[in-house]
Image (cartoon, rainbow, N blue to C red; front, side, top):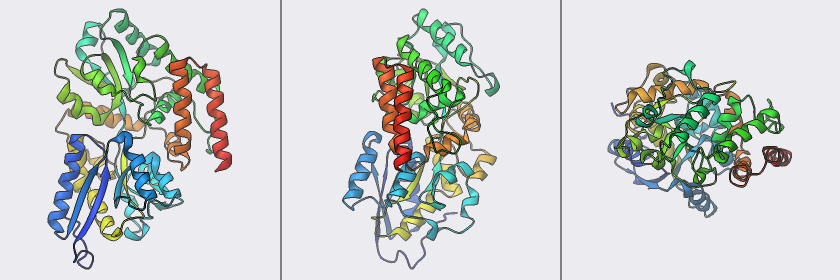
Length: 409
């Protein structure tokens, strides 16, 4: 049954909406499918999908917001919602939803779209990280991979495997991490695995300049010092590591579930699979995924809100995530499971990894000030990885910057 027909009083006259997104072919196709479905039910509404490269996305949206010509709706990561809410660039959606609407979503993502108790976006999907591996190369090295979460490699075992690959010259580099293009927050996966935090428990002070913080910087710095990862894959580069994996340059890749369609299509010369992230004193993974907000510039916010609720209803969320290889954020889909047509066994690994996302990490990266932490974190880690800045100095610099932001906010 098609749901989401706009109240007849809303769209009696033609309404044109623009929705800005980024994404690969599978994602764009999935967006277009739900748009076509909505337009069929609401023939007076036309929605234009504006696809922007991710590397330019926020700059373009911010420029349009400054000119008061922003798209009606825009895709946004959970880490950016607070910034748009604080700047009143996204509108409060409370007026368009019932009081019990939030109960349908998982608590972590619903908390991520809220600012001062009001929702400024609706959750659409989540995603997370795991370890892609070239099965042919690991077999050549005599390495078997973990088959359950509780058997995930330790940090030491992961590095042992990487060194075996390097010593036997299997692939040009043992592995690469996808944390480029303003995604430096993914470095915190390892910080939490090692028992550290960027901020203290109540998020009021930095906690990076600690043994756990310094040791995590040193561990990830060692990847570059020891030639275990390509030097072009530091946090401020634009290297698409999925290409390096698909063409056999790296034998393993730490990346997200949304890369499955690309790898499945492009990696034609090797067998591959997905196993669990390495762990240290704890297991930890990243809160990924996106939600959708309505801009303050929308001339038809009520129609935009109707489409947005249609986009994230159970039926359309299921269709989108199964087509684009994402993970659900509605409780009914999380509990009932989703049938993925493409690589369902690998998707099970990602679903299990979502159980390891620390709530404190979520609370940290959805702070409205996160957008101010992010560039400095990238600057300092990049200096450590590419210029040899000491882990101690790196932690001190990050601590000072975080303290200044917290004091000025």
